[in-house]
Length: 89
Image (cartoon, rainbow, N blue to C red; front, side, top):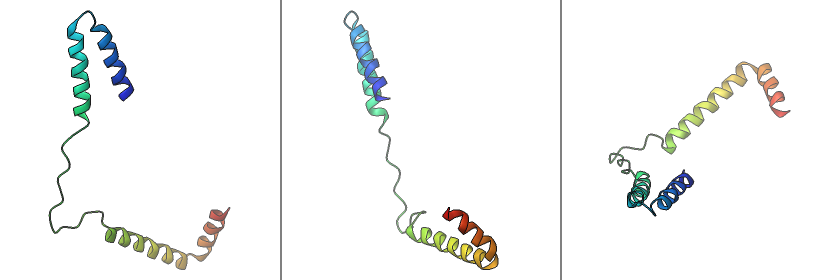
């Protein structure tokens, strides 16, 4: 994207040799490009509230997944062994 902006700016600068409006267009293009990437920062989280994807939530999801996998292996031992063999290939 920046290569395209630089190429367009150089083209407008070359065209601007005969017409000053092209120079203004090149400057406007650069200003829009430089200011366009900067938006307002996201609002801070409310004080006292934990972020939605905290480490505790990650641990809870990980532990729940481990419990499901242990239960699956306990209830379906033959299927679990077959899947383990296929995974090791």
